[in-house]
Each structure stands twice: as structure tokens, then as C-alpha cells.
Length: 214
Image (tube, rainbow, N blue to C red; front, side):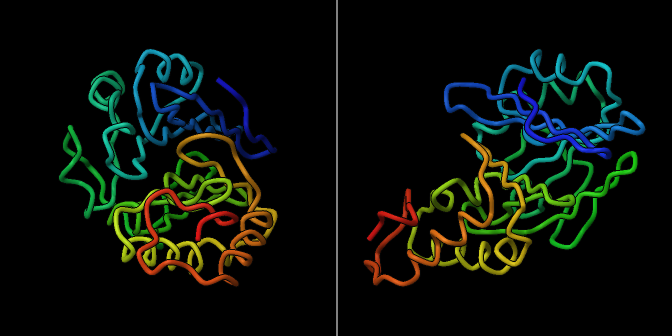
């Protein structure tokens, strides 16, 4: 488990799990010890160990691709806490969710409030979670590009989500994605500006990179 952010209010730890190097995040209120889990890729025992010493309140799901859900049933069984997801992705869950989240909602635990951003494109119900200068971006935004899309229409949609919901945030926002390393929003905005300045194949989709995709 790696510490990726800490201030006087909260601590964010990352576990990288499974064959696709999925990131699971544990966000803990430093005042009360209450915590949330974001995504449950695999290795429930590792996630439970990471939660030791905290008081888990919710399991939040960024989207319901199976590489983000492998440990969900076991985690839910052990913790007995609500699972939250966007309703457009809920049918793919292996457990019954207790909470449906939409853009503009807040998830509160301890003295922390997470703002929910609905960012469709990778999936219809993709969510990001924002608190202060920290963004858990799921598979919506990665260092160097957006999440994988299955069609040109999906690529346009995820770019609209990123431009409208994420690039309006302060440039020092830390972006913690569903796979791989974290990034800073200023860097992503600069690279996207270069992407936007060039013409692109109208059929562009899939694994797109801001600096090299044509």
C-alpha cells in the first residue's frame, strides 16, 4: 500500500492489485478515522488489511468493468457497508447496491465530503470523486490521455466529460486514476491543448494519447 496524499484533513492510500494493475484507493478522515474504499479490483484480504485501524463507511465504484469489481462481493460480505454506484452502471454489479450516485451528489464521511462527478464515455455511468485538490478519476482520465473508448462517439463523450467536469478544476489538482501513476491536472490540460490543435481521424477511438494519437 502506497501513501499518495496526506494533509491535515485526510489521507489517501493506494493499493495496486490484480493482473491489470488496478488501483484501489482508501480515503481516510484524519480526525475521525472514518474511511471509504474506491473500487475493489481483487485481493479482498489486501484491501481489508489496508482498512485496519479505520472505520469503513462506504464502497464507492467508479464504473463496473469487471477488473474493478473482483473483490467486491467478499469485501461487502466482510464489511457490511453500503455499495454506491451510478445507476447506468448498476446492472453489472455482482452485489445489490444500496446507494445510487449522480453528478453533483456528495458522499460525506467523518469530516470529509466527496463531490461526485458523472463523466460518461468509458462507460455510461463512469464516476470521479473530488475532495479539495484530490480527484479519483477512475478510468476517465489517465496521465497522457483519456480512458479507453469503444467508438468515436464514446471518445467525443469522454472528452466532453473531461473538458466540462475536470479541466475546469484548479490546475494543481492531483489526479489519481484507476490504473497506473498519478498526474497533475496542469500537465493534462497542456497536453490536451496540443491534441485539440491537430486534426484527427474521424474514426479515432480506443487507447488515445494526447501527444501521439492522430
